[in-house]
Each structure stands twice: as structure tokens, then as C-alpha cells.
Amino acid sequence: MDKDFITCHVVSTATLIGLPIDDEYRAGVERYFGIAANLAALVMAHPLTAADEPAEVFVPVSPEGS
Amino acid sequence: MSRASELLAGPAFALADALRGRELRVTDIVEASVQRIQATDERVNAFTQLTLSRSMAEAAALDDRLAAGDATALALPLLGVPYAVKNLFDIEGHTTLAGSKIERGAAPASADAVLVQRMKAAGAVLLGALNMDEYAYGFTTENTHYGPCRNPHDLARIAGGSSGGSAAAVAAGQVPLTLGSDTNGSIRVPSSLCGVFGLKPTFGRLPRTGSYPFVASLDHLGPFGRSTRDLALAYDAMLGHDAHDPSCVKRPHEPTSAGLALGSGGLGGGVRIGVLGGWFREMATPEARAAVDRVAQALGAVRVIEWPEVARARAAAFLITNAESSALHLPDLKARPQDFEPLSRDRFLAGALLPAAWLMQAQRVRRWFAREVAASFADVDLLLAPATPCAAPLIGTEWLDIAGQRLPARASMGLLTQPVSCIGLPVCTVPVWGADASLPIGVQLIAAPWREDLVLRCAHTLETAGVVHAPVAVLE
Image: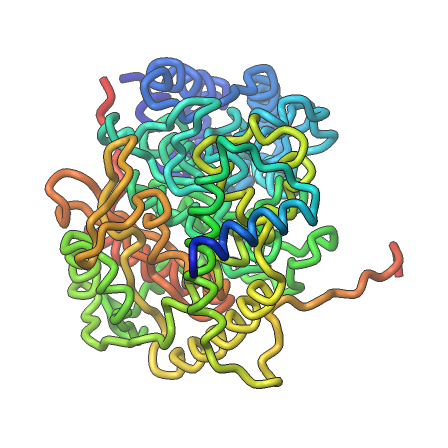
């Protein structure tokens, strides 16, 4: 992913969620975001169908003692 | 060497047998364990806290029951066995640190973690809490706040992580059993590097209630030991559903100890065993491949099985871990980022910024991969793969050369474990010596979900044949 895109995403998303990122950490954060972006490219390129549900399954919570 | 020290250096089951025979008191064993910790831990740094008053009280209570002829006490499977837990398990009255500086201000735990309760009920005696990577986000236990945990077999090297203290305490002969957690490899990596046995059960098998989470959708808990029988005894003692962990699956009680002797039906006989190829060979050094080959040869395994799209599965595990753990710590990442472990802080911050579509696709790829791998078990019962790409690197190592690539050392220690825990398969890691010039390397014995019995049986077969073993490190 283009380095400028990463910088732009990190700055705007961090602002959006109210996460301050000190200048001291910024280069490291962008480096790790870049690693995640490369791995995400692998995952996003994998063909799936509508039947491929997420692995997470919600378990309903029953009242205590029922 | 005293009789208590001799027993402490051996397997837990023999120690419990000696106590049943009233050869010595539980208190004698616990005192020997404390002495061993005090004599070695300045160098190893496996423990972050000793629970001495509790340890002595638990030992005295067991001695009183034995002296009174309590038959129930005599039958306890882990009678008088000293053990310790990764410091993300709740210990009543103590603050659960999870390797962090931030949690030092948290209130003490009001109760023991469920697995600690079950170990106590089985007769084991808690000695303390163990070093780990902060919030379990790491494979090396180079913890900046509490110091690096050192590999007992070479103190200049890492113990692995994130349950580094759990593996090192066992390898150092401080205690014969410990508990740890495994999200992406945190039981299997340190077991491999410290030369001990480690069991990561099926995802959802053992309840995590009362343990500090890392990635709830991937976290597993399990035991470390120097013998397969000890692993089986501890695992059996911890079995059972707990409704407070929503990922814990209701299963029949399926203990493993009694079936250990069934082995693999002779070395390799009966159980269909394959070697994982592709990614699991390519991302391993010649030494790690040699470790697998030794086990494969001993078991007569010649068939090579390749799982599809392993790199994508590993990528999915990475993304789920990064996003979920960062979301968990978001309030502290906003308020006090300077207090996080410098080795993982930037990774946590980045994880809070991942697009939701990446995470959801990762969870879908995980499901897809689980189905593909399940199909591979139509042809085999057990699969072999290295637990780590190499033996223990020196503390502070930044880069590794693997498969002709220069890769970041800390993240790469989990390359061969992440694709397996991503889909929750049970794994016993067994320690192989001689593949590397001086250090152990672990081999993963992997089975289909809920077949902990099979991985333990085959590990026991290898142990009985002398192919794998877990010696106490020489630290004098």
C-alpha cells in the first residue's frame, strides 16, 4: 500500500476515534499498519461465497438458573 | 541432593506417588521448590511473584489431611505437586498483572481463576506467578517492565513467549508443572525453545474464566510439564464446562491419562500419521525440519499433507489478533500509551485503526480454512510440523533468515503455530534434542478437534521410546 495512503489513514482514523498518536510513535505505528495492510491484501484477495460466515458465533445468554 | 530435591527434578506423577507412600511431607517438597526458585531465578527470571504464605498453607493443609488418614487426599491426582501460573491467571488476593505496568493499579483478584481452583482441588500447590510478554502480545518474553525471561538451557537466549516464564520454570526444575495461555503459539513456542512438553487443547475445551484475555476469539489455556503423563494428569484435572466463558463448549468428560498407554499402537502403528508440507517446511530452518524428520521416522510417517492457503490463514490470525486486542486496550492506549511495553505499543496503536472489513474477512477466511483442514483429517489422524522456525535466538535478536528472507525475529517465531491455533486444533509440542547443535526444538503433534487423547498418546509413545525428552537444565 502506498505510504501516503497509510499516513493519511492513520491520521484521519486516529482523529476519528479520538486516539492521540505522539510524534515519537508515529513512524512505528505506520510501519505496523503497513504490515497489517500487506496481510489484509492476502486475506481480502481470497475468494469466498455468501455461505462463508465469520468464525465468530454469538452464544445467547440465558438467565441464571434457567 | 535431598530426596525432596530429587523428586522435584523428576516427573510430577512420581512426586505425587512418593507423597502417597508417605516417604516425606508435602511441606518438604514445597520447601525444596522454593529453594530451587531462590537459587536459580535471579538468572532465569521466570517468576514475577511467589505466593509463599499460600503455598505453605496449602502444603500444611494437605499434610494434615494425610496425617489424619484422609483417603480422598491420598487419591488426589496431583497430590502435593508444586505448580505456578502465567501472571494472567487470577490468584485470589493478588493483582493480575498480565505482564503489564498498567495493571499494577488494578484491584486484587477476588477469586482464583477456574483452572487454578481445579488444580487446587486436584491436590496441586500454587507457588506463584510467572513472567510473560505484556498482555500476551509477543513470542519472546523480553518484558521491559519485569526483565527478560531467560532460557534455562542457555541464559543468553530467549525462553520464547508469551508464556516464557511457564516454560522456563519447568525447564529450570523450579516446579514440574505450570499453566500458560496460547493465542497464536504462546504455549507451543516457549515449549519448543525451552525443551519441555506443552499442551494447547482444542479451542473451547478448557474455560478461561478468571484469566486476563488477549484475543477472546483465539485464546486457549493449557499446561506445561517435563512428562506427557504430567500433562495428561493436569489436563484431566482441569476438564469441565464453565458457563462464565461463552467460548467454552459443553463436551462429555473425556480424560486422557488412562489411555496414554494405548500409545499410537506401537511406534506409528494404528494411528495414521502425516507430515505437514508446504508452508510448514518452507518457513522452517534445516534444524527445525530435521526435528520433524526425527519424529516422523520414529513414527513411520512418510505421507506428506499440504493444507491450502496457509499464508492467508496466518494473515487472518494476525489481523484478528491485532484488531481485537487493540480494541480491548483502547481506553489505555488513548490515556497512557507511554506505559505500554515499547516492543508492542506501536503494534497495539496500529491495530486500533484497522478497517472493519479486514477483520470480518479474516473471520470468514478462518472459517473457510477450518473446513478445508477438517477435510484433510479424512486421510490422517495426526500431523507433524515444527513448533518454531528455529531454536532459541539470542535475547535482543531483531532479524531472522528464514526461507531466504530476512524476517522480523519476534513476530516470526509464531509463523508455524499461528495457522494451527487460528482454527483451534489440539496440539502437543514435544521436545527434540540433537536436531540443533545444542538446543531443543519442539515438534507439534496436531489432531482434529477434541482429540487431545490422540496427541497425548502419540507424545507419550515418543517419550517412552526416548525420541523426545525434557531434561532439567543444568544451572549450578
